[in-house]
Structures are given as C-alpha cells and as structure tokens.
Image (cartoon, one colour):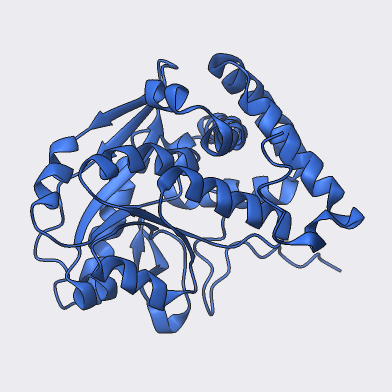
Length: 318
C-alpha cells in the first residue's frame, strides 16, 4: 500500500500500536482514492450527510455562520444550504484522497482552468507569487492541480499548512503533498521559511480567511460582519515584493471536475493601509463564495473575537 513504507521508515515510533488506527484510516483513504470519480462524489455526499448528525456542534457553528452571512435566507433555504454544505464537506474528504494518492492522469482530467493568462503575465515579473486563496471544501486538491501550471511557468510551489495533531496524518499529508507539488510544505507558524520561499521566487499557496491573533490581524467586515482578519498577505508582499494572485477551487456543477479560478494580480498592493488591504481580500473571497456558498468551509468560529462570541450557548434558565 502506498502509505505503509515511505511515510514512516524514518520515524520508527509511528509504527507503535497506538498509531495503528491512524494507519488504518490512511489505508482506507488510499483505497477510496482508487474508486471512480463519480462514485467518490456520490459516496462523499452521503458521508457528509452522516457527519452532519455525528458532529452536531459543528453543524450548529455552520448554521450560525450562515445566519450571520446570509440573513435574508428563509429558514428553509438556510437548512437546504446547510445540508448541501455538509455534502460538500464529505466530498472534500474524498477529494483529499484524490490529492494525496490519485494518478496524475485523473487529476489533470478533472482540472479546468480559468484565467491562466494571469499566471503567464505574473511569471514575467521575476518575483515570487502568493496564490491568495480561501478554505473551500476542495482546497487540498486545488493545490495539487495548481502545481502543474506553476511548474510549466518555472515556479516551485510551496503550500502552507496547519500541522494536524495526529503525527501519522501530519506525516502522510506532508509527504504526499511534497511528492506532487515538488516543493515544500511549510507549517503556518514557520514565517522564516515562508519568506525565504517567496524571496527565491517560489509560488506560495496561502489561505487568508481564518482569524488570527490581535498582533497579526485587523477587524474588518466579512459578509457584513466584523471579523478579525489576517494582515499576513500585506506584510509578506511588502517584505518580498511578491505578486499576489487570487486563486480558488470550486467543484463544477455538472460533475465534470473543478474550476481553477485565477483572478488578475492585485494592483497597488500592499497599499500601506492594512485594514484596506484586508477589506479588499475579504471582498474577493466573498465574491467567489457567493458563486456556490455550499462549497465554503463554514465550520470555523470565524466571527468570535474578544467581547463578542455568537457561538456561545445561552445559559439555561434556572
């Protein structure tokens, strides 16, 4: 099996019995990655439907986010969107397997690029590129799809990631990503490595839509709601002169694969006003999310900040 030897031969402790359930899960992921694509999406949608009942707290968080971001939806419309979101999350889990273990032929067949000329133009600038993205449910597969086009333009692709708590999952994620993108996977806390990659002219994929600590963020609107928003993209672009190109992945409505949406490079960016830059980035993300809201990752407590917690359960009346 593709996950048995190469991922753990330099770290013997990962073969200890306590890690066997994790390896079994990785083996199941590999097995499911070999199934036909249409069946994978059918199965993923059903797994997502089950997950909605298995993790009710996450469903509650997603429902609150949808209430905040789409206040004009009726209860029936919001419930339908919430159900569609969990189906999309389940499909995303199967897509992660395609990303890690799917054949290059299969991945290429599913990729449909929009706006490739924007990458062509950026390649002539002789700078690193920040692929500005967001957490759509297909994001993991989108990173792998993008690397082919970046490689053709002479760029090594580096992907940021948040290390999972399970060391087996972390090991497999990192090694399978690096096997495909041909570059490095950098932990989101390793700022030095990130800046070094941009300065040597790499393309770095970076999702800018999750909340950050006060030192690295400003509070600006996201879907009309005040949200603590990263300023890292502005600071990275300022320090490295990198070109910032919005890049997103959405599942096609016809079931024929994925739209790789490449938008024009940001101009006059950074502007010198981090709040204005953050608002610009949020507006770009909003425009893509509105194309198919079910495919955005609504499970995070995006709007929680000091003094405001819309996710807190009300105290029971005595």
